Amino acid sequence: MKVLKFGGTSVGSAARMKAVADLIHDGEPKIVVLSAMSGTTNQLVQIAEKLYQNDNQEANALINALHDTYKQVVEVLYTTEDKKKQALELLHNHFDHIRSFTLDLFTIYEERAVLAQGELLSTALFQFFLEEQAIPSVLLPALNFMKIDENEEPDTDYIAKNLKAELEKYPGATLFITQGYICRNAFGEVDNLKRGGSDYSASLIGAAADASEIQIWTDIDGMHNNDPRIVKNTFPIAELSFDEAAELAYFGAKILHPSSVLPAKQKNIPVRLLNTMQPDAHGTTISSKSSGGSIKAVAAKDGITAIKIKSGRMLLAYGFLRSVFEVFERYKTPIDMITTSEVAVSITIDNPKFLNEIVQELEEFGQVEVDEDQSIICVVGDFIAARSGSGLKIFESLKDIPLRMISYGGSKNNISVLINSTDKEKALILLNDGIFERSTNHA
Image (cartoon, rainbow, N blue to C red; front, top):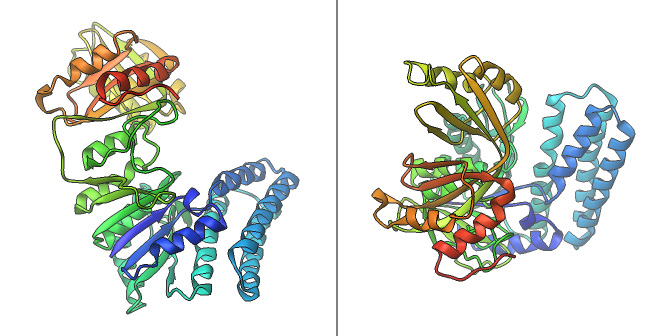
């Protein structure tokens, strides 16, 4: 059994859905996880914002516009009047459900139900198309087996048990279609795995089903060695270890959701990143295998805030760092990087929601300085004992870029530096020219 996930652009039109149907119709047992059609989730977010503002007139206008978009998809996707009628009735029911939220109080619970509509629509429309093409398949409702616990973490035991129960209802079936992103929470309410969560869904489902392989299909041919939006002539990386892929995903490589590597790693299930537009391209294979001793890729993470706490009197005191970290824990704010000196500790965060409160508490320990609009540049590879001189290549390439922080040694797979966001594009280009053999220029 393989698990194949197709992102929003892969199912973003009638033509793309037909191409996906061709890709999966090969007789091999598989579970296909679909995102919402591209643009849908953003539009649902806009609708929710208007509903929160009690701007029901504008909300209805946005709902009607999205409904019209889906009607056009139906006209192109199906050839029989019977399936068109069935699909239009489905749209009518879903969009009436969304419109019903304009009639009552709108809360976060209703928002989650609205945001779930994209995946419910894409999978239902796709299942109708497979039926029209006489391709045997089963639509598995993700809400029957995907669940998060009270800490908003996946309930893996529940997922495994209930996915198995769902699959056993259909003996002999080999093709299953289900939704990414959506789930139920600990209270049984409709919830989600946050933005980008369809990758996470695929990895969790793959682990629960003991899949032989997890495939993530997008509109790019694998994970590239640098950001192709900034640097010309980037190239896909053929192989990455789980740890290398996790570092790249966390520090800015958009092709893969950061959380999606761990479930596959725990079950040692290879993950392949493939391109629906170029299905014959090799893409990137992520596994426990490591090629060792080489720089694989560069990624950048924006929206970083650096916080420095300076306290010569207290820094070396027992429990000081614990007290600092507890401030961030209280506000559920993860830390990306940390560096220390004799008189100061510097920390970076990517979520400034509670920045003012955090700073106010940290000022009890000493002088606090805050630098916003920073970027983390992450260089990923297998830097065992710095045997390859990787550090020299990296820092020689960045000699003209002011470095705010450097993190090296916390992981054998990652050397990170913090810079001003205004220097990010220059830094990516300089690193590309300095550490990769292929000559590249900025896009």
